[in-house]
Length: 302
Image 1: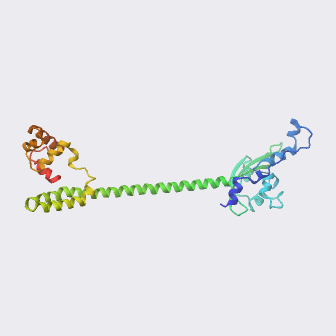
Image 2: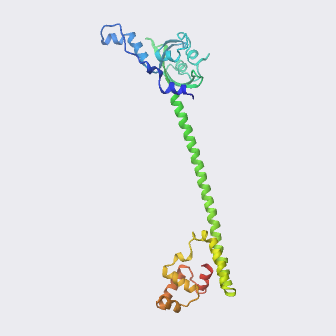
Image 3: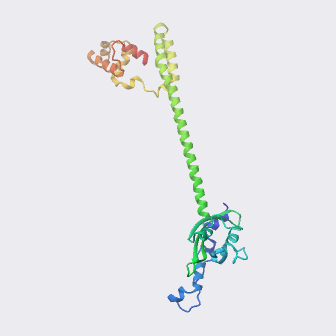
């Protein structure tokens, strides 16, 4: 929709030259001369910023107000012509013409019809058709009220287009969110597999090598492996996360092969206290069976 249509529908050109006043032939106002004055009626109709026209039963134009004259100022002859011929450049009535419907129903009707602007764009008019009856209640014509809603339709179209784009963005956003969740899940699965394999296979193997090879060489390999997998394992919960600080100390000593008595001496506590911590460690690791050696488990999993 071009600038012409937006300009003509957002700001009525007739407002630039408003009527200066109402001029009557009467010298004074009273109820009778105002209501019976054809001059007053014409001025009222001409002051309306929407279009007003009066048609006979054959849809021929009998009267148009100032607004319609402005809209069709390039048309030389309007009176006596068919409304659809002048207003819509057609040879037959418009498909949704409310006047045509009023002729069939004998009732007021309303409809929306397209029209072509000066720049050959499509505009939209909201038409109200009101039958005019004679004293015998027979229809002798129609008052047609014409409101240009092109700008309104333009805004509605733009708003609808904006909402469609917003829905598209939301759908794409949902898709990306699901994709990111899936990628995060896959990443976590890979990291979890690496962490589990480290605990289950690599660390026990290193502990085994320490018994039969140079401890320093194994320690070097162990440090290198830890450095490689640290970015992954640092984010993972470890067995130590379940323990208190004292239980962590006891667990490390147990892993190193110290007895409860030796641990008690180092920590300056009683053997009974160390055994208490041992029991809590086994409980937190779900090692209910006495058959499972605590030190072996800690070596395998830590």
